[in-house]
Structures are given as C-alpha cells and as structure tokens.
Amino acid sequence: MLIFRKDKDVKPTKILRDMLRGSECYIVPGVYNPFTALLVERQGFKAAYLSGAALTGSLAIPDLGLLTLNELSFFTRLITSVVNIPLIVDADTGFGEVLNVMRTVKELENAGAAAVQIEDQEMPKKCGHLSGKRVVEPQEMARKITAACDARRDEDFIVIARVDSRDVYGFEDAVERAKLYLEAGADVIFPEALRSEDEFREFASRVNAPLLANMTEFGKTPYITAEQFKEMGYKLVVFPVTLFRASAKISQKILRKLHDEGTQKNMLNELLTRQEFYDIIEYKLYEELDSIISSKQFKFNSQQ
Image (cartoon, rainbow, N blue to C red; front, top):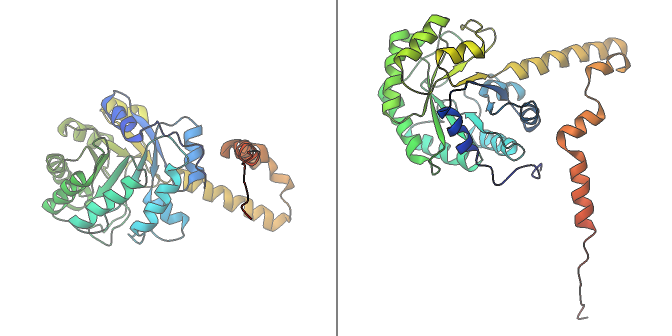
C-alpha cells in the first residue's frame, strides 16, 4: 500500500471548499488509479476527478452503471491514500434510491473523497454525451441530493448535482432543475452536455451557484478553454477521460511497434525511464523507511 505520502494534517474537503469560494477556475483532470492521480498532483493541479468513464474504461467495461459501490470505494481509497489534493468522485446515480445514496456518501467519505457527484439519470445510465438518456423526475433527484447532504459528517464535504436533462427536455428544464437541486442542498451544479458557449454563459447567469463544466472530448460540447469558463463564472472544469484516452492511444502505438519490430529499443524516448518512474512513486522513501525500521533493536528477555 502506498501510504507514506499522505499528509494527515491536510483536509481535502476544506481545501476544495475554499477553492469554490475563490475567484479562480480550476482544471480538474480525470484519473482512474493511484498512479494517474500522482501524475496529476505532481503536475501541479489542485484537484483530481475519479471519472466513472475512465475507471470503467480501465476495467474494460462500458460506462452504463455496471460499477459497484464497493469497487468505487476501493479505488477511491487507493487514490486518496497517496495524494493530498482533493478527489471528486463520480458516483453515477448514487447506486439507488434515497437510502442507497446515503450509504454511498458515507462509504465514499470514509474512503477519503472530498466531493461526490450524483446525476439525475435513470438506470441504466449512459455517458452524458450519448443520445438516448433518460432522466428521473426532478423531485426524485432533489430527494437524493437532500439525502446526500444529510449523510455527510464533514460539513466541508461537497455534494455535486449533475443535471442531464438538456438533451432530454431542453435547456430551460436544465436551468429549473438546477435551481431545485440547489434548494435541496447541492453545493455545486454540473450542467452536462450543454451545446454552446452561449448556453454555458446563460446557464451561469441564471443559476447562482458554484458551477462545474465538463470538457470531454468527442462530445456534444464544443471545445472551450478553462480561461473562457473562468470568464463565464465557472469554478471547476473536469477533463474526465483525457488522460485515459491518451494513455490508451500511446499504449496502442507502442504495442504495434513492439509487435512489428520485436524490440523496444527504437521507442525508449517515448517511455518513462526507470528513474522517472521511481521519482514519481518516491521509491527511495520506501527503502529509507525499510532501513530505519529494520535497524531498530528491541530487548527481549526469554523466560525459557
């Protein structure tokens, strides 16, 4: 277990809460395991996003709500044990009805999450940028949000409400749902799959709350920069699958070369060196800790 790096004095929930109170707009890359989270932290990002799409993709299953709460909690705990930056966790629809949502928040908070994101889709859910989504009644989602807020024990723990109705009932419905979810207690509103910069701008002008935008690739939202989102008033911009897609693409490329050439010597410049890898995981620290503990001497008086 990579447990030596975690700073016990750091409270990620408080860090994220303070980020939302400020004037900055933060880029939040999607991660899917502890190593990618370390890369994000090392690059200087202030938060990470455990993406359901990236995590299920890394497990070779589609993002259709097939992940279990135990699996999500397991990966959340692994990631939060090695980084100090806040982790926002995509919990899909909350794994069921009101009581299930409360358990979801409890489990993910125990696992070290700084925030949980819950969406208003019906099960089986879909990627927010695919056609054919179905959404629950607004009141049902509002009850889930209230349950999530009631279940948290840390007052700084963030509850994010994702609004998926833009593609189902239109922009106006998404705005009204956002207002209802705020009334139910949501800390952050996440309008999914808006179609233009104008829609993002109007949404921000009509929904008085910290806002999160999704800047995924190959979706229904045009490419908008973090600086543009900041100007519109958004606090967080997640890039949920960018790192996973990049890793998969370069892996494909390397495997093709390895298959064709039978050696990796012509692609060493595309690989992490041994030292670069060791630096990221702080290999030397493990050796030092082992040496310190192994050198300790204990007195033992045998009674035999």
